[in-house]
Length: 94
Image (cartoon, rainbow, N blue to C red; front, side, top):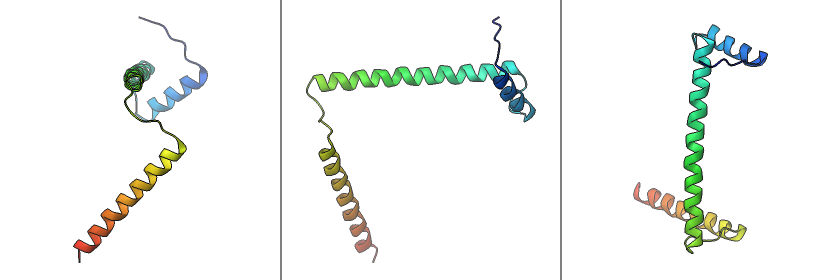
């Protein structure tokens, strides 16, 4: 068993959660906090693996450089496709 000393603010936070019925005890609140931390760390590790994959892809010459100009072009293309889709829906629904 591990003893953990909560700060006064943390104790008050846990107490409010217990009083509202969210948790039954400080221990339950701390277990939930650790579970959330564990999940966040798992997501972080997955993100870092994805980032490593993206870097490796770029090193192989895959992908494309993102610049302000390329983003404006992409936004323009997306808007144009959206307008075309909307026009097609409007003309087929009549």
